[in-house]
Length: 301
Image 1 (cartoon, rainbow, N blue to C red):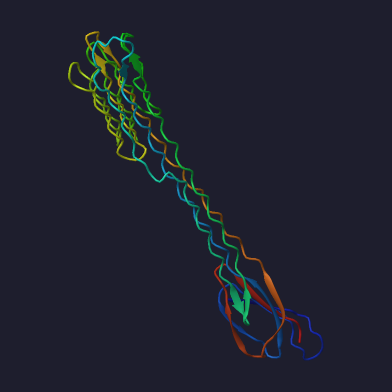
Image 2: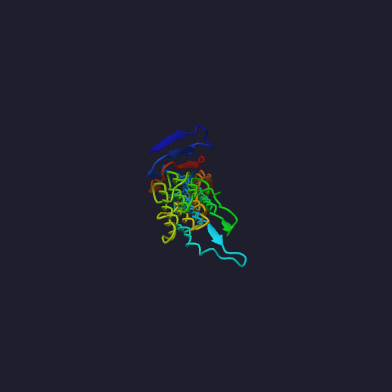
């Protein structure tokens, strides 16, 4: 709607006084009788904000480690160790940073007399998020030479992987559970059974070997991104009752970081046109963008 403000100055008898009309929304400018030259100034709408960047993809969990093994060394061979279990793998994702957000739009222009008053500049899009950190692999069940005793030191990967189980007498230790996205894998203690993975998605540890004929089994892989694989079961050798621990479960991967927000658009700058010819008593459409403005003024004529 127009807002008119008259000027009181006259430059001689019979001359039309100067004045102005302000438009904060679209309307029609009616040229005063006797006015043939005007000036206009105005601006369009502000530019829109840029879009936020996308989050980075999640890091993958760590793999479970193999169970402990027994190595034959020297000329004596009291027997053949049973097989040890391999560690479970992990599910993978894109492994990429997020995409930056799209820029906003330039603000629409205001117009009058076929002249344009530009809108503000668009805001830039936000930066993409970083990819999450991968989980660590669990510690392996290690190895020991025949005649060298037992090996039962192990640990789960960080964060959240379960420790491999300790072997005893004619039993190899079970593998530790892989970390789930939310819960830690189970582990720690003396048990042949593979330990459960954490929820959701953590792989179960493999079972330890049982003399004389049950080989150790492999750990199960993590089933969803960020979850980890279970550790493999440890081996055993009799008649000297050597045994090893199961492998540790892998640690969980971390979530990707969120993208940053977009930047706001800029306000429009005022543009001015001087000495525009108009027809006295004619009507002209005025288009004003949302938040913009057009001011038409004239000197005494």
